[in-house]
View 1 (tube, rainbow, N blue to C red):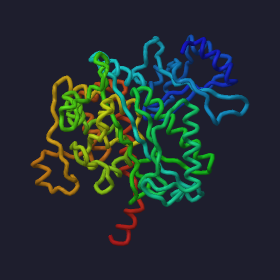
View 2: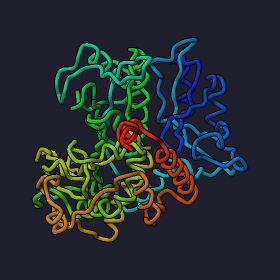
View 3: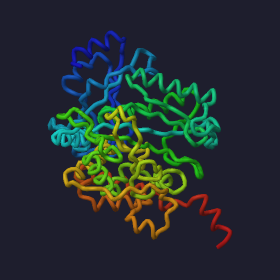
View 4: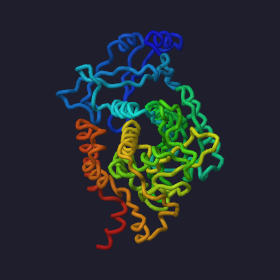
Length: 442
C-alpha cells in the first residue's frame, strides 16, 4: 500500500487519530498518537521520540529516534471511537543518522529474515498463545472466569469474551485458525494463522493487547503470565515452524520418503535449535516466572529432545494430512507468551539456519515419556536439560556467540542488564512460602 492510498483510506474510514506503535526491548507495545492531519508528514519524514525513556532503548546522549510506519500494518482500532476513529500503524525505528536503529526488535528480526532469504528460504510460523481470564476484584485474588477444562464448552461469559476478542482481531485484518478452552480453569488458547514470521510477530502483539482490552470491557483480567498461580497449568506458546524454498516454490521441510516426512533441511534445522536452545531460553522464556512453568508434570518441556507423538519433547513433529505436503512442520514447545516475538523468531530462525549451514543432525528421537525415564536412561540417550531459572538462561546466553550475534552488542548489553536486575530483585524477595515454612520452626 502506498502513502497516497493510506491517506485516502483514513479519509474514507473517517479516522481522526493515528496510533503509531512499536515495542520496547521486552515486547511491550508503546505508542505515539498523532492527529490524522499530520499523517502525511509522518509518512514522508517520520515522527521523532525520546528513546531514552523506553525500556532497553538508547542512552540519554543518543536518545533522538524516529518512527517510520509500515503501511502494510494499517487497520482501524475497533474500540477507539470517542471523538473520532483511531487507526493503527506499526512502525520501524530509525536513529538520528537515518539508519535503522540497531536496538529495534523488529529490525533485529528483519536482518535474520534477510539472511534466510539469501539462503533461499522464507520462515513461516504459527504460534499458539495461551492465557487466563480472571475475575477482577479489589483483593487481587485470582478467581478464574470458569471451571472448565480442555476443549470443554466455555461458560456463557467466556464464550462472549472470546467472541469479542476474535471479532476485534478480524477488524485488524487477522484470520484466526482456532480457539478453545485449555486445561486450566479459565484458561484459553487462540491459534494464529500460519504465515511469514514478521507478519505473525505483528499479529501476536496485536492479539495480546486486544485480549487484554476486550477482557477489561467485561470487567475481567487477561494475563499471559506463564504461571499465574501454583498448581495450575502454565500458559505456554507452542510455535509451529517451517521453511519455504523460494526457488523450488515448496515446503523445504518435506520429504515423502522419510519416516517422519521430514527433509535433511528440517533435520538440520532441528539440530541447530537443539544446539542453541539453552541460550535461546532467555529470549523464549524471558521472565523469572517462566521457569515456574518449565517443570515436570504439566506437559511443559524440561528435557532437550525431539519426537513425533511425544508431547513431553522439546521439539515435536506434528501429524499432517499426506495430501497437504505444505503442512510439513516442527513444533517448538518451550516458548511462552511473555517473549518479545520479534526477538523470539529471530533467535529461532538463526539457530535453525546455523544447523543447515553446518549440516548438523539431531540425536535419535525419544518417543518415550521423558518425564518417566530415570537418570541412567537419560544419560544413555544423551538427553540434556533446559535451564531451570532465568539466571541459568542468562549465563547460557553469555556463552553463546551465535545468539549474541543475533541481538547485537547494543541490544545484548541492555538485555543482560535488564534481566540481571530482574533476577536480583527476585532473589532478595521474602515470599509467603518462606514465612510459612521457616518462621515458627527456627
